[in-house]
Image (cartoon, rainbow, N blue to C red; front, side, top):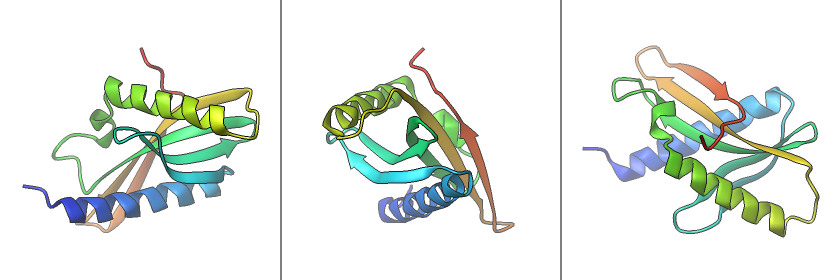
Length: 125
């Protein structure tokens, strides 16, 4: 049984590690935890050169329950897409290009190492 509050803390730590990783990779963080509805939130909105990037972050303390990427299903991607459209409609800036990325953060508690993987340009298909 998972403890919800410890999962939330783990998720926030993972989001911070992902944001740090993106900044080191040259991205500009625009917003975090953009809420579209009760069901749709974008963890990080960032700018990669001229592209707006909607980033979903999945954090795990290992892969014994599957890889973090496996937790992002089609419904989750559709919700990020809808939230992204809402953000674009309400944004004062005009973006020609946008995409959805997923970042996996694995905090290996045994080795105290963090492994970050970044999948770019996720499609709905």
